[in-house]
Length: 143
Image (cartoon, rainbow, N blue to C red; front, side):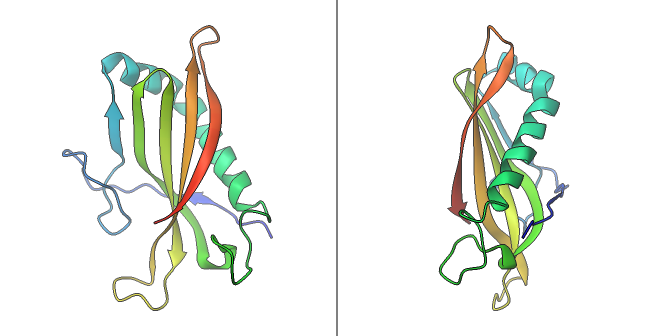
């Protein structure tokens, strides 16, 4: 089964750089070591986000990592396919982290029937010689 993904954009201002959730609908929390790292991220933003989308799509559509088995997490049948960026962390050249958050159905929730479900953190390093970000890996978490 292929889960069709759709990126959503949360729109509430996040001037205090607070923790982002689907409930508070804040824009991503951004953390840069200095202004040069922010500029470098902005310069490569399109390429980075394309790689993030590709990596997370492959992850959730890998039957070994995500399926409908009752003992599995994440379970594709519990996911809406919608995702957003919660955090961007680029404190030094050696490590860039983009935390994506997927929504899932929460039928017995007292808060909302759809809420944060899965976090996928995509890791990059920067290669100065090639002037590009190199994908280092991905980690998952229940959120």
